[in-house]
Amino acid sequence: MIGVVVWSNGERQKAVIWCEDQGALAYLQGWESLTPGTGWPATGDLLELDSEMVGDLRFARSVSMLNRHHYVELPDMLMDAVSEERPMRLAASGGKRIEDSPNDVARHGRLARHLAVCAS
Image 1 (cartoon, rainbow, N blue to C red):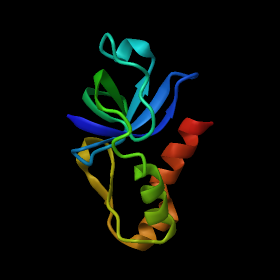
Image 2: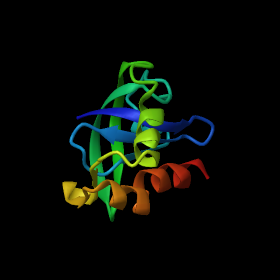
Image 3: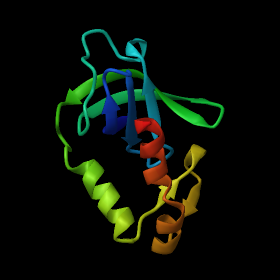
Image 4: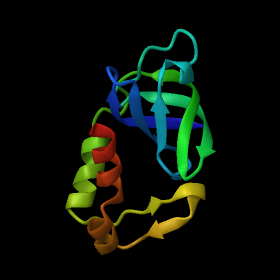
């Protein structure tokens, strides 16, 4: 699967990845989840990965770099979409749709909460 890093902290060895299947965000934790020779991914990097559900969380596994800094503007675009109440669909685990309307996205702010939890 292909994904884009929307948040990363190399010191804490954590990152959040938005995946092409539009399912739950994938969490990357620790160097052991990266393929050998892959440096720690930064915001905007395009990755190839496998994912694994552990409880209600989706974790990135076997992560390799496809293109560095490919979508650097993506995190800002996503946050702008939430704050401007543009129509946006967010997905829960298993790809089940949970919000479709701009008001639901703004009220729940799931993307913003995911990013805030990872940043703390």
